[in-house]
Image (cartoon, rainbow, N blue to C red; front, side, top):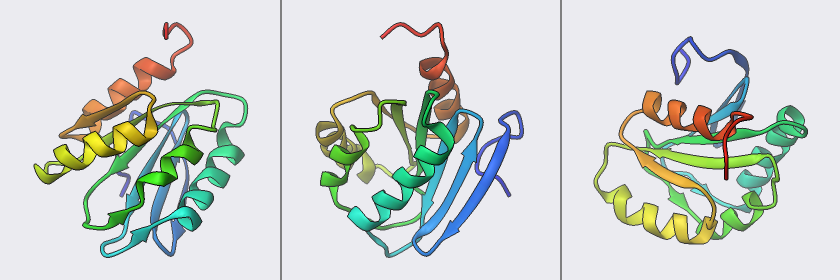
Length: 135
């Protein structure tokens, strides 16, 4: 089952040891497994996938926070180096993520928004990766 509606064109699903990465035509959805300590090794795998699919075109990343896991916020400095990554959407219904989001946004320093559902996050990603978007 896809994490986001069928109106987005699913290109490939990567089932990795730390979670699933779903690649669509202009966005990536990441779902990290419960109990993972998300670190540099994991972000490197995500960056490799992004470079395979989006080396020459803009995309956005949706972090679908279904599970509880630890995240090293320093990984965001590596994501900032992806020139085609135009923004990150964090999707969670958990109130605790509001505090975590502020910390993550500080470390990332680029466009990042918190959403309660993946569909709204997908719409925001579409709006920022479109060729007509003004920074």
